[in-house]
Image: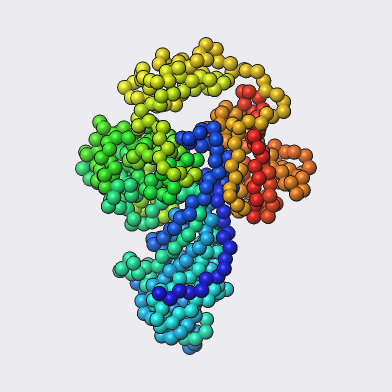
Length: 601
């Protein structure tokens, strides 16, 4: 099979943790490791090499100078040179790339086109990156001006060529960095020969355009393309919702997940991602996992919960989720744990759930039966529609954003789904120390008020008393006002630093930090440029000689963040900085044990 020349391009991205795991591409990661072998140790997110083939989400068409007012969207794409006056015909191709993690370091990306009708002679096509939006209804008279862009690498074609591979590595890297993805235009420069390609509407799916990507990343974004819903094996993308008023109809082929309650209706969702098939996921340390549900039809304010499904085990069977209805969903056997809630304000574009603990247990080797989605509040009597895997818009499909350190097999040490750990810890909001550990270290916590098993990390208010089976050792008087810490921050391993493996892009520059104590009341980042011996002052947007503490925002129980935004990013170009994170907690002022170095491009 003939191949085409590839331009020597340098990777334009590097590994960086994401938080919008809308993972917003954080470039410094100081994150808590949940479910790790050693909970006090944080580890750099090891880049994981992946091959990705994108075959869905394509748009393509061609425009014809000879029929300037007509659109030519069809099963083929015709490309003709400028040998004869008025005979030019150009092709445009674009594809959705949301399945590539935002922190991906793209080492190779190729747009692959299959030839339907061989070239009438030797010719050379030149792809160019499109700078303006377009649709498949484009015409020569309406689009030719915007498509007349600077050409890129030349790709020779002969009558024997059956496949064309166009190197778009640099383009994909920059699209991920924030450049608008309008795809590419293909033209023939010189000569009047013609070649015809199969389009994204070809009857044979194997002949349609595709994008092949090789990249390394510490995170993974799981989101299927349109029409990839599958029930051929357990663990594939599957989702559905069940309806009390339509109890015998499957909903897995719809483009929405309808969830909520009314006076006469109950609707709940089931969603499963093939996360266990990700490279290095078996035994991995999950740094952060986020379930993102885009909203397609709004409702009123309420609270939703996403829980890990524990029973019945039959939900792990091929197509088990897809075939569920309200009548055949065994609610008596359906159980879920580690519910994480998210409040909906009636206007949010997405609903996001922190599911790190749930995904960690799957990495530890427990069955992935999926997520159970439901409305927890009973007062808001309305339905909200979320996009499903079948939604025609890639932006509306559910996604699971996971940042993890690759493992080498199941970690073990995690109890079976739904059981309490042997060393349950009772946590109180006004406890000054971390010594309120259950003395019942060999017996799971026994439920005392309900028939539902108590989860391992039971929490209470400042006035709550632990159950008799999980009595904290420091029971009598919480020392909320323990001895004040020194005025100078004390270095501690409880504040941890993680950096990426190489230079990071400034386009989504966010610093993050772990608080392993989960007790900090405030946090800040000191960012130093050692070459100039100046500190970054985020309030003024400039570098200064005096040390400056940039206030951090708490983004989860364990994570703090500080972002560099807008024009301020220009002052971080091609420099190396060192970062310290400090926090004020019940034991006084603390700072990270070591300064973290990071190179920014």
